Length: 186
Image 1: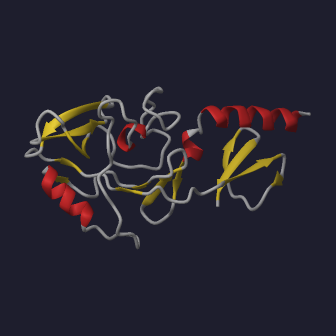
Image 2 (image 1 turned 90 degrees about the vertical axis):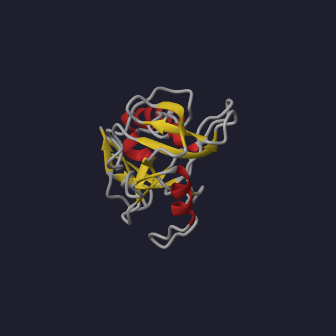
């Protein structure tokens, strides 16, 4: 009975929002996959350095790392469209939920930084939308300023996680623990 309740509790929670420890999968190659969105990000958010918008765009267009060459700048919400940078640090991978930050994620160097997006501000082509992780503020910035580049690619195949309850597992495990319920990416 306890196992059945644990399964039901876990499934109910997972359908609302994947816990950060399970949502973000460290691929072990300097990248992290977001299971809620299917997007792959560089693990080190500032690996691309601070650049002007034009040099940031050129940098990601020519970036080949970890065997991937289809990197780009993430998008942001512009005129109500859900977009990629906005979903980072959100409980459900959407822009409408609570900002949790990056505390329980495998990402590094995310705090108090401004990241370029791929979206030009519609009112002035000399400005682009950006994400400020200090307070999860989406705003526009002059393209001549220098802000950080956080490359993204995808969507990519989403790594599954294995549920282990009371020593019984489906597939293989080596896992993240949540009480008696463990999940593992494989």
